[in-house]
Length: 117
Length: 112
Image (cartoon, rainbow over all chains, first blue to last red; front, side, top):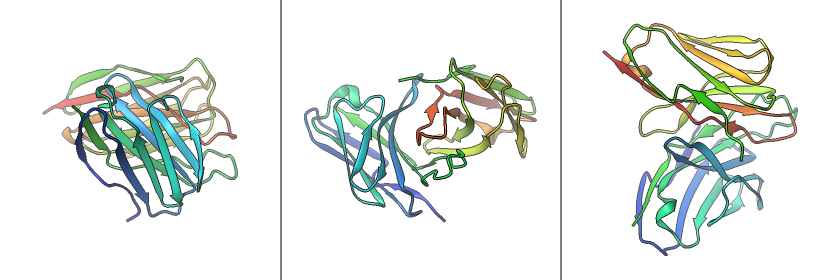
């Protein structure tokens, strides 16, 4: 069964800590994404990567960075966690849409619920 | 960044009722997706739409790609308790982007 695996379901961190959220996919997908989900705001894109070592900012990149050293792994880094980063974080992956037909949706992980205290 | 507007934001319905929800945008999209998120899980793809006017079914679920290409609709017939969750629409504007824009979600609660 193909999947996207997020390393932690729940995390509690202190303000100012450096936080790493890990995501691994076993589908050999080129694209990987990090979203945060907040009530009433839906899913907002933080960063995405379309290839190893490549990354692009999404809509809300401030306070975050990412790392993609291997194709299957995409890490989200909170440089100095703050309480307004308390949220559900979702990782997703998709194949490269080489034909441009939009035939591929995203496969999501189960999410990491992060609480910053 | 742009987000899609979903309506209603939440709804309670009785088991056996039909459900309708929609997703609207000020921009034209060439692909629409509908996802369902069960409590405590990530979203799972339900239906994908690729052409204006297209109507696609997946069991009791039917989705339509609006004629104007600025909206999409999801209907659930004869709802059951396991339909509870959050339904998200997602749209892609053109073939040159990997990115989908997600809606704000419709939370569905089914009363047995």
